[in-house]
Figure 1: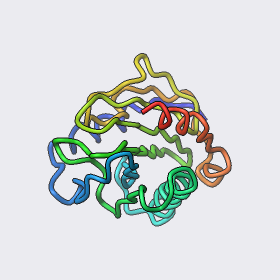
Figure 2 (figure 1 turned 90 degrees about the vertical axis):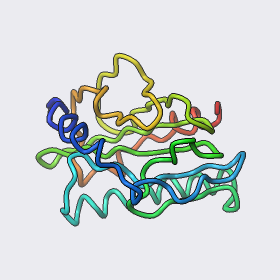
Figure 3 (figure 1 turned 135 degrees about the vertical axis):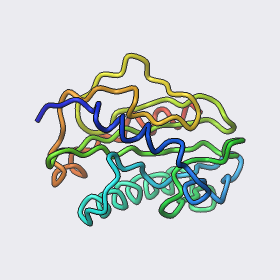
Length: 172
């Protein structure tokens, strides 16, 4: 399954200015901790299958984080908290972008150091081009990727490769 994520980027750009207090994390996490934010779903949808998949993705990442850092240092944010406050989080932040189109899905993680620094994008599922693997703080990653191949959404969790994510988290 091939396609461009251009439509997804346009939808995200239009909604970027609409990020209100509901989408901003009510917690900054702990120093030396990890904040696992609710996934961005692009395009936004009320489809229960995609919403369950977003929750399962976040749970998988949060469970791995707890195994690595311990539950006292991992802050898993509820829906819809998908961005750190303007001053940034105290701990490393991990956000997931779940893109979907015609039964296919892609996942990109963004890892941000404490504060309001640029974030590193890491592809976790699907094939995509990223001319630069970084995105400014709080900027949507979907504007900087071109999807080359989607993974069937019903096989997404089995296709997820989180090894590069944990390598990047370890570098923070």
